[in-house]
Image (tube, rainbow, N blue to C red; front, side):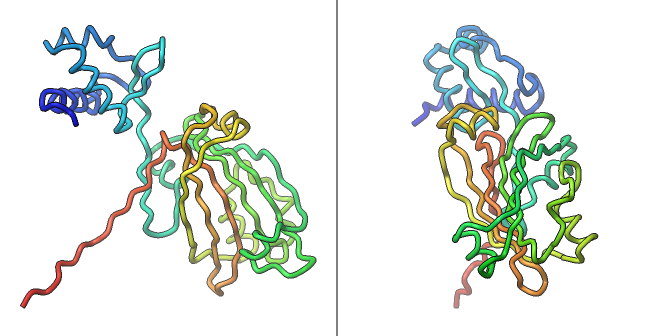
Length: 242
């Protein structure tokens, strides 16, 4: 439990960060200097900084100092998950690197999600998503080639997959079932996401359907937990009292 003074100090520092006193990525003054400026003990300042780190406003690196953390994208979980569109709408430069693309038989779990029959082939695409050149999502997507023949010849490095499906195949995606799970990054995943191995991440599981109710896409995406925060907003209806 934070002391009252530490709570007030954390609120003051938070306001200063949000008002732009220190920019994203900028190093804050040393703990002892901040304590002197605010006329508090170092232990109180440490409590306040612990709270700011817990809420994701700052990052502390041993031997390097304390830095203002990148703003997390708050993405609503109501409706189809559209983090790339949300990032673009916020003015971020979003780019995609296609890491692998291969056609072949699906695994049993993917076949079940997509409703594939024996002998059906799927296109598997592995992509790395970046915002302002910073990796934030590692995504694997599977699509049944029976629904989109020739999709494996399309360059998706600078084109939206959903746009290609709509304009070239007449497939309009209408509904998605999504879930999140907390996971820890493997060494290979961490290297691609430029994030420490074993760091917490969000695993997004998604199956997307067209207007006919046919499964068109199955996706597994790893999201850096320091850059993305799912947001749930809902209306609360008071019970009727008699």
